[in-house]
Every structure is written in C-alpha cells, then in structure tokens.
Length: 250
Image 1 (tube, rainbow, N blue to C red):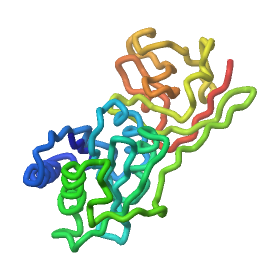
Image 2 (cartoon, helix red, strand yellow):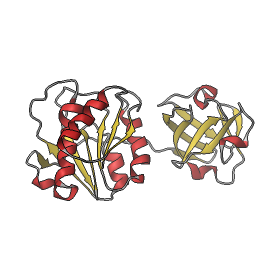
Image 3 (cartoon, helix red, strand yellow):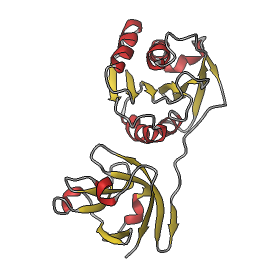
Image 4 (cartoon, rainbow, N blue to C red):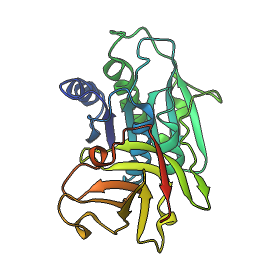
C-alpha cells in the first residue's frame, strides 16, 4: 500500500497516482488532499493521529512550501512503515508515533521535470521504488543515503498552573472544532472551565449540549477541543491555529 497526503486539492494527486501506477501495482490510498495549505505543523499533527491506524505501508507526504529550493528530500523508516517527503519537519512526528527508533535517508534527486511539482517528479517515483524494494531493504536503493541531519516539527508544551492551563491551538478541523495542545486528562472530574472570562461546560461529546451551544471536550486525538454542537467552535470561541489558549478553573 502507498498512501498519499497532500495539500494539493485537485487534480494534481491524479498525476502522482499515474506515476506510481506506471512503476508498481501497489494499492494507493488517499489520506487527504485538503490538509491546510502549506501548514507543515498542522499536517504533521493530523498524520501523527491518522497513520498509526494503517497496516505497514509507504506514506507519501507532500506539503511542501519550500518546493524548488535546496531543501532535501527524505525517506524515513519507522518499523514496517516508510514516509517519503520533503525535509521540512512534516515526516518526523508521525514517524516517531509509528516507531520508537527511526532511520532517515536523504534522496539523491536528479533534475526534476518541474521545479514546482516535486510530488509528481520526485516523491511519487521514490515512493513507488521504496514499495518495490521493500521497507526493510532501503539500503539497496542507490538514490538513498543515511543522514543524521534533518528538520522536525515541534509541538509546544502546555503550561499547567494551579489556576488552570496555558496552551495553544494546534489545528482547526473541517467542522470548526478547535484542537489545542492541552492534554485531555486536565479535564478529568471537571464539569466546567473558564475561557476568556466565560464559563463553558465540559462534556463527553457534542450532543451533550443543546444545538448551537458551545462546549469543551476531549477529542479522539486525546487533546482538549473547543466546539459547538452542530456549529463551528472556531467562530464561537474566536480561535485560529496558533492562537494562545487560557483555561481557568471556575
């Protein structure tokens, strides 16, 4: 299996699939092609959440604001998985979620057909080649060489205080649910929290409040989330990705 994750929308992923199909008969699975445009950290967060649900696979990840520059191309081996993509930090958080020990390889890239579409010209063919040779045989690919120098994305740690927690918004999903870096266990045994001077209920799921009402819950990713039952949490709370979040205990 080769999975594809990009911020391309349509039709660019189809070209990547065509390249892969010419080189291997691997099944291709779309994770998403609507990751936030050029948002490396948000993509790394979602892939850290999604990719562990897959069986062993090659994961081609192309959210690449540095396309056409001298940034490197990488293959990261994480147990029985391999991640292929740009050296901008997007690969490392999901790789470390898949395996405690990882190995990183730099890809020797020949002059691509386009300086703006490395998804088609670099990462799709490398993903197919990795699939064909096998994740456990990466040393057999002459284009790969081991490296200890690579970029990674860091997620900020929340600050836990006696009166509450200071955190940050990591991502906003398609529903407007606003996901913070605050671990869900800070809400254990709490019925409410105060955000920007307003008190909000802490509930196990969206439908535990009336339609249109805001709430605070713990999402399936395990982090504190700000939401609205059948509405948009980002609008109700006024949050965007990267904003500071202050939770206070009532």
